[in-house]
Length: 181
Image (cartoon, rainbow, N blue to C red; front, top):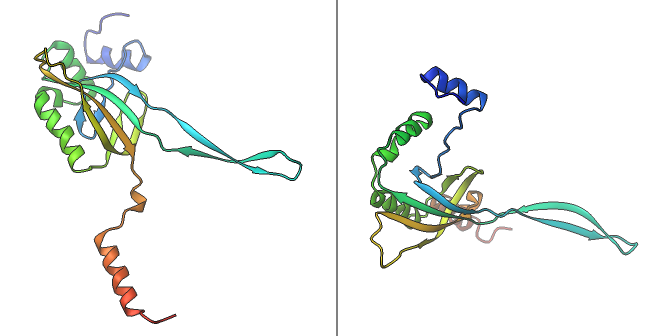
């Protein structure tokens, strides 16, 4: 690999696969400084039906929604040349403007308001997730300048939401049709 001399060299090396693209780890709009562990199991349920001869036949496969767990680090801005290159390649400048406390407050805000989020990792994009658990990992003997936590995300089915307007309409309809068959 040759060292790129200008933006055209960078673009051509990324296109050819010689120069790797730096991937962002994001929780909603929050850029994670580091991902130390990811647990994203995939599980399916195979449904069967019995046939008269005494054996079963597979008649369906259902993909089960599973929780994902990310162990993350939220740190202060990185002003290194590498961070500048990363920001230029990814188009995200958030790493230069937020402290780890700001990022932690954003994460806790997502948790407290039950916000439906997309989680983007190097492995996959997980849409419509809510934070079901945040487990901060602190060492009482250290004064870290970052926030380290294990965050659990649970799938959220927004098709089952009922708005207040829907409830009011149903109540009004039931009052009008009282006694009707």
